[in-house]
Amino acid sequence: MQSTVIAPSILSANFAKLGEEVDNVLRAGADWVHFDVMDNHYVPNLTIGPLVCEALRNHGVTAPIDVHLMVEPVDRIVPDFAKAGATMISFHPEASRHVHRTVQLIKSHGCQAGLVLNPATPVEALDYVLEELDMVLLMSVNPGFGGQAFIASALDKLRVVRERIDNSGRKIRLEIDGGVKPDNIAEIAAAGADTFVAGSAIFGQPDYADVVKRMKDAVAAVRR
Ligand code: DX5
Ligand code: ZN
Image (cartoon, rainbow, N blue to C red; front, side, top):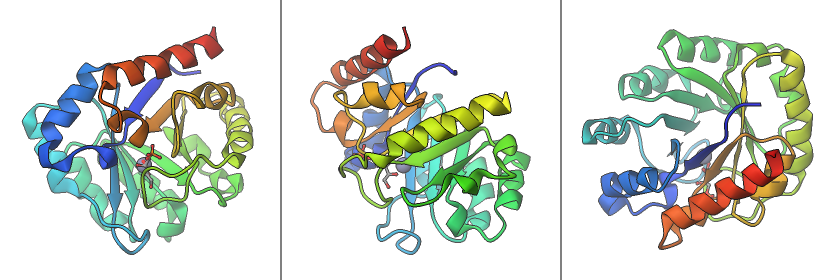
């Protein structure tokens, strides 16, 4: 299993001072920046695009930027995010007509590629493409909004995907996104996740370092 990564979703940050928020959460011990891109088409919400990613890089952010595309179509925007400094780019198979091609496109632009499964998307969506991926992202809420409750069926799905990744023998991260909090992260880690997105749980608290530490401690206790 790969090292533990805490990836705060900036969807719940204060956008009026985004650079400062990102600096603070990284200084607080977070590992990646989770960057939620919504288009008011694939999901009923509208957020941020490549310009904001580039602005964070220009601000001096060197941590990995984990771009989660909730947009349709996918391919047109991939080169823009690669150019804007994305480290990994993940997308939903329902939003791309040629999933395998989109994975190759992301990698050809020098980024790592992730596939995102919604709560009702079967794990068979990984068939014939898992070996090409750097990351599988399981949604534990329906995409579109922060602050929703964790959907418990994601735990069984994590166990199934964990086994598939282990059997593949490849270094593929297993990320979970939606409703992750200090009080449920232990069971999520036990089910097989190694990469944890958390938005409201971190940015909704005054002391980011305290939340990040509680999350990391809870994961470490499970992995010991
Ligand atoms: C939902 C986004 C998530 C969201 C997580 O569509 O993909 O990244 O911001 O927020 P919380 O942690 O508040 O559920
Ligand atoms: Zn996300």
